[in-house]
Length: 636
Image (cartoon, rainbow, N blue to C red; front, side):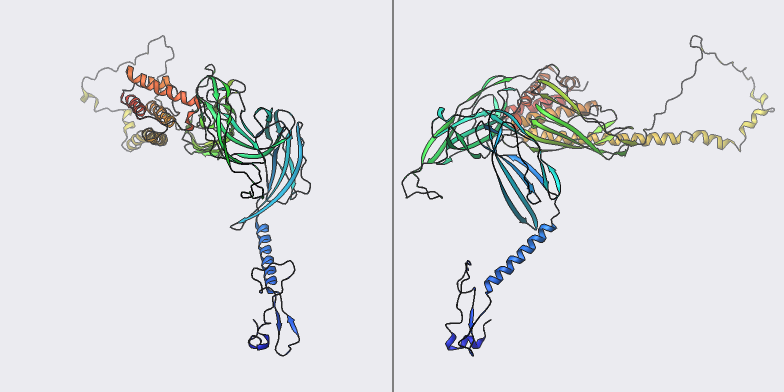
């Protein structure tokens, strides 16, 4: 505050606030950063006051820095490292960025060296980022290696060891696919497009990564007017995701490369054409027209339109072999790993074990269902909760987990063993994986069922000897005077004890048998109730779902559950022959059910449940009629 006397003094009204801008400092409002006060009693002396804005800015900066350091010190998150590629596929001579990201730690003093035979490291850069969200501090350091492949093939960038904050962290290996590359001469000097598929020979139902590459002169300003569409017949596909952009050198010229990624799933065997893919571009070239400039100040000519088309590619599709197909094969095709863990490791009969099944690898994860028990004897499994991670557009890699309770109904020494079957497209054969049998202690014993003893026959060839018959008593009154020693066994003092002892001797056994029976019935009742509830939900999907694959899949599963309810088995009945044998169907009903299973199997192995194929009302009615005819028919 400036003294009132100083403010009112007429000689100092114009000298009260003299702004002096500090060197290198840009105030928001001139005149409010530094003051000189000339007091009334000393007109010749001006006392420089403190640069209040500069002090305030310094104090705020110090406070913010202190809070930031406090938040950083308070964050106890473990440091993590991860790696990624700017593109999973590149051509020979095209550059690709390999990024090593470190979270929760400072940058390493000596970044790890990267050396892969066939890949040249053109340069290394480093950037840092610090963010605070709700006092949650995230510190991230990214080391970028620019790689240029020298030959085509598949390269594995091995794991790297990173020393951060006194800890040794390891990265995961990454796969890079290098194609022969493109030549700018074959498509012109300005723009051209190509389709790339990681495999040219596929099986029905196998997923394959597809990349549409658009090369445009890097000196132009280009905009893709609409997302590309993959044309073709005999396969299903996902929508393209947002493109991955980078700059590449081809034939001594710089191009801006935009990669559009997706996956396809063939649905029929034979030769199939993937593409063509037309793309509508809006571009501007550098010119002398100063009326239109870009953000860099370059002159641009008026915008023009053009269509760039990626030519079609031909792929060969083979049917899945019938020989060796496992009974529980659900249509999974690819390369997978399978493991299962359970908790706790000590339970009682009737108490559930929580199992977590993990399937990871690459392939058509949408075809992977809940793996069945390898040996269901003594176990009661329930419907699992599913979760999937990965499988973004253009990728076939992911992890799928199943979490479910499994109840033992008998004494067991190991965890339940599950079986997962898939078709290995690289080896061309079916594979069944089983998890390791981990130790488990199941306490308690099932109550044995009482069995009536059979009479012992020493010599089966001889007829049993008959007991000698007592002579008939002609007159009961003659025996009354002389009862003899036999009367001692009917002493009134011992008769009640003997009678009640004989009568209630089997009571503990009966009670134990009833308890065991009740527990078993409760488990069966819970399992049957869960199956009925699941079947009701499936029928609701049959009536209300819009996609054809979802309707057919729900109808088939509803019939499988209904057949299981009819038979009373623990596991789900999957075999079509066993399902048809469980009911007395007429010719039309059996044919309708077979057509339903065949239609679902065709979609199952073609991977059409990705969506996009809507069901017609007439087909939905046929599906409902097939299910109704099965349920109305009498049981065998």
